[in-house]
Length: 484
Ligand code: SAH
Ligand code: F3S
Image (cartoon, rainbow, N blue to C red; front, side):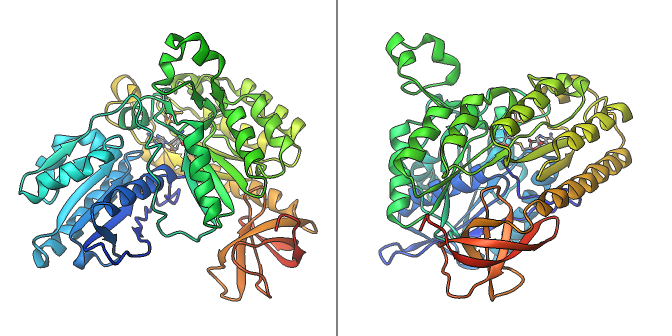
């Protein structure tokens, strides 16, 4: 899943999230979300729960009755940004002393009570599986007591909570299908903050998509830390699958089957999914993608490193050779597939040789996009406990720059392949640079801008690609696509 961080200077943007107000709601909620798309979707679940408690969203911090910040722990920088944000809330509280402040998400789960001790401004600490408890916790807070719930759950998927869409373009939306992660990559804090893997009932997924379709949405991204690991067998933790009844095992739904169900049920909706873990990805998924035009030909397939030594130290369950074989198979089945990566440079013990292996793997795959990071040690992970963070900062920085430069060259190589082609684009909004141009994405997830003419937001349009940079295609619409 993409984190909203810039890779090199690691600027992290929070977002004040809002939706249409309801006349009957009297209280004001200011909510912002840091980190991944899953957090964004969780904030929508929280807004839905609080809507029923009489809260409307506001974009004006100073007028809020309740401020909630959904936090990210993935790298140290993400946490420092949130701490700085809390200082801003502190200043506002001086003019608005009745305002309450709550911390949600991964930092809440990681720091627990410590948050209340370390940050005096915080009244409320709620972990990712405890959002249903928010109404009770708010009663505590409003009676003047601090409140905390960081209990991780075996079966919480918020399956029956219909998220309030925040900052929505009305065209594309996220639907969570799994929560948690069992993979235990040694560098990663997610298994600790989001708990064990569990999947959501396919019926509730289909129902939520139907709601989106009824509201005229055109594109759904199925979300999870590890979507390919999706497995519905009646609920509960994935690791308990073997203990489930024979019937439950025999009628279980895996990710390829779920994708197939969604694509068949909603033939006019575009489907995307994120994130795929190479070790959990089956070729069945690729075959289902090939079978349906409405499943976008794009996979985010993080590898983290091209070195077998590093992959082993990271507890990734595959070698570089196996990863290359997977990539070969993907391109064999779907030649036009677009792939993106996550990479970590400077993990414990990484040598120049290991780094060269990463560059070599990137040359082999030529990813369309990439999200690249310098290793940041996270407290509590196996790497933090057992492996020295021994690559000096300046070397991490240099290696990071090298992979960013190489990725940029590959991105340009990939965008150039689109020149002269006519591609189906879903219009998602106005181009940031030019109000007379639309912006949308093709099936490969590449952004395309083109003159608006008579086309409208949410239209599927055929666009002829005429020019490109490494990040964006430029074109001209040649008519509606047959998906309208
Ligand atoms: N499976 C998840 C991964 C979440 S973390 C998903 O949905 O994408 C996103 C990315 O952050 C990882 O793929 C990894 O490249 C990076 N990352 C995770 N822990 C990190 C750490 N300690 N230091 C630097 N980067 C890290
Ligand atoms: Fe983290 Fe690895 Fe899971 S990167 S989210 S532990 S697949």
